[in-house]
Amino acid sequence: MKRRHHSFPLKPSTHSFIQEARKTSGYSFFDWLHGYIYGRWPYLYISIGTGEHRFAPFLAKLWQIFTKIFQPKPGNNGSGERITFADTYHGKVMPLEQASRLVTINKDISLKDLEQIIPYAKARDIILRNPDHIVALECPCRAARPHPCEPLDVCLIVGEPFAGFIKEHHPHRSRWITQKEAVDILEAEHERGHVHHAFLKDAMLGRFYAICNCCKCCCGAMQAWRNGTPMLASSGYVSQIDEELCVLCEACADACQFGAIHMGDDMIILDDKLCMGCGVCVSKCETGALSLLRDPGKGEPLEIQELIASADKECHLVNSLLENKEIRSQ
Image: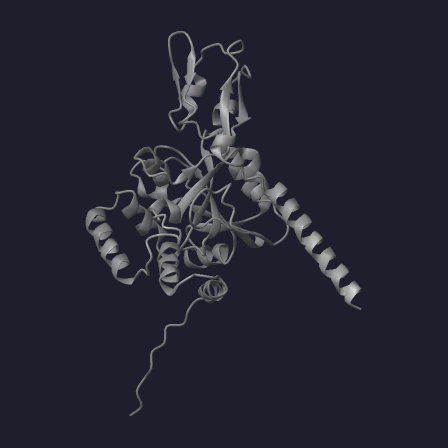
């Protein structure tokens, strides 16, 4: 009697994820396993992270034990600087215009080690394959909350292998959308007063994979940021107030997701340290008293078109030098 061998075939998108992982320098099996768990069960992962899952304390301790056993060392980045949770999982705040540009790229790009823009020790690459492959996913943070903000399908998974993986594994909670539809979602969320974050994670191949549209009542990253985990980076801008135009309506204070604006004695007070430069307050001010101002102390903005143009120029220069060298050698 022959034995039956039961196989568990992987989905095509999982194969694509594995293939891309093999091309990624420094990406370990543990990193891939972590990324697979994160992408395969994001609702469980996030509900534990936000503390909403009823077994969150137990499961969080179990995960800590698992990572201590299986996660490869070191605990630093090679220069002696300790790697923190925020270094491995973080978001870059973007005003609406910047976010819209990021979902309308029409070619593959590879922008690596963007330390000045994404100021963390790990996960600071923007590598997009098939950038027009975009999936709208029901937000795991909102889904974890008992009374979430709506609509739910506002997380934008951008490019491959991530978009295909999410759509294939979560067919009932995600949908393919066009780049125009992605911009429409961003504009609608901005109108609701929500903040756009470009998220990067070491387990997701150490790169950008999604734009989340976040509110302070649901977002796990904003919750962590309020509790002292610096997993959100400023847009590179801060709001400024023109006191002559300000009518003290407090619309900006009500709209601020980061608690950076409040009413003082006959004046609006803006805390530059808390301001993340999202631009929500600017759009809510009917008198035009608010605007965004570049602040070098907040890091560089994620201006994707400028980054692409700079990379193309550098590539052209290198190619020209190689051609000239080849001509001279002939």
